[in-house]
Length: 119
Length: 146
Image (cartoon, rainbow over all chains, first blue to last red; front, side):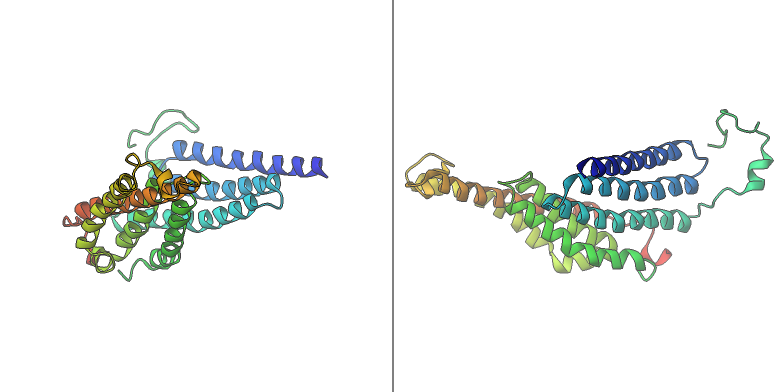
């Protein structure tokens, strides 16, 4: 039983770490503000839930688990709210997503590591 | 301000919880990580969040400027007053054991609680005062421009 719980919690923790790292890479590598925000917000919420579920399994039926669930609830509320606030401010101040024809207009080689000159 | 519906709802949900957590950190600080400074910062965050979302005028009607300035001084008075009260009881400055000379560790418990409360009050006042000083400047984007 202990082994089963350990295996399950490790799967959850490693999965959550994977999502968080992927979100961080997306934040650095994606082309514009909106896709970066999408990467970090979605991957962060999902990774956070998996990490906290894994830590709850390690904690067992203790006060630690109750605190972890509370932390999870608050992060699940505040994370998307912060993302909404940032995206809302960007939209109102006039930032628009890059569209496909905009990208095609600049002749960059596909899958290139050359940084976009427009930033 | 009608524009920020989600922010207003979530803020109303969170402000009370943040204040409750600040009290938990304040009065549980001698058993778990935390203490006066952290509790003061968390308490100030509740008011700053309220001010950011609902506007400076509303938060200053709840927590007026004169009260903030009095709190800054009151916390230091609580801290120093605890120490002076120890001297009045015949011991050194901040020798908490004097509160209960027959059971020194109980006296230290109460003394640390009082001193940490003073630290928390001062930190809350200072953080909110700094926020008021910055936020009182005229904004680049008015609330009507949203």
